[in-house]
Image 1: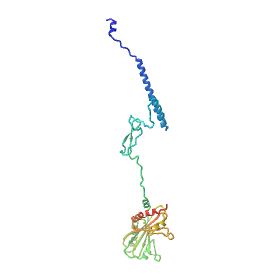
Image 2: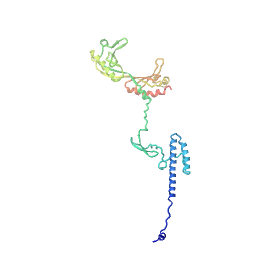
Image 3: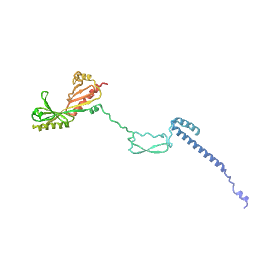
Image 4: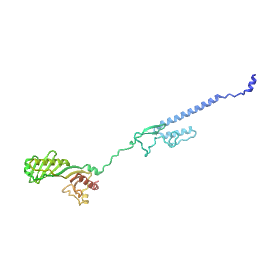
Length: 319
């Protein structure tokens, strides 16, 4: 077969121009590389300027540059950029809903600029220690101090006071001044008034227990002297306590408003005498806010008297 026949049967295919195609792809790659560099430069400028507290001016500058780069696409300054195309989700850490609760040590996913970072949630972190407020009555009750506890017993026999005075130590007897023997002991420190009828009044103690111990010791001393003394009818007769309200009081106005229960004669005594009917407690009220309670047979009566008198004295406070 000749060469001419071959040329007629086989059609000629034109050779593509590969050089033009390669040049177009290289130019496209260069444009994409330049575009990425411009975006990186813009992001770098944002991060640098934000650290210097110029975020608003930076966003304005970036929006102008993006207008030229993206052919007229605009960026809203007040719009917060979103992550992953989600609309309405801010890049900042969202506030935790008040109705949502977490167990101590539970881990919650907090969205950030690039990924989700695990963050430990402590439900007690937002709690603040609240100290309960103490009312004025409670403060006054805390200032109550028992100064004296008076008790009585009966020995069940008649006594010879001169004989007891001559045979005991730490005792006094002067019938011209007082018709009883005054006896004292050291532990607990107490004083007893011994009468001919066998009644003994014990004073000088700060609580009921010490008063009971002292009364038994005085009865034992009388027994050792040869008298058939017994320990009968122990009773707490009187509590003497003090309290400090820590505010001055208008005693004249108090006496005028409560004249049925109060008496105030500053020429004779600097305090106002207030006699309660129930509980049967007598109060000595001074202008500086100090109070002396007397006549109460229990601590409860002292506290009850303070609960009653405190709001009254509060209304006559000198401001």
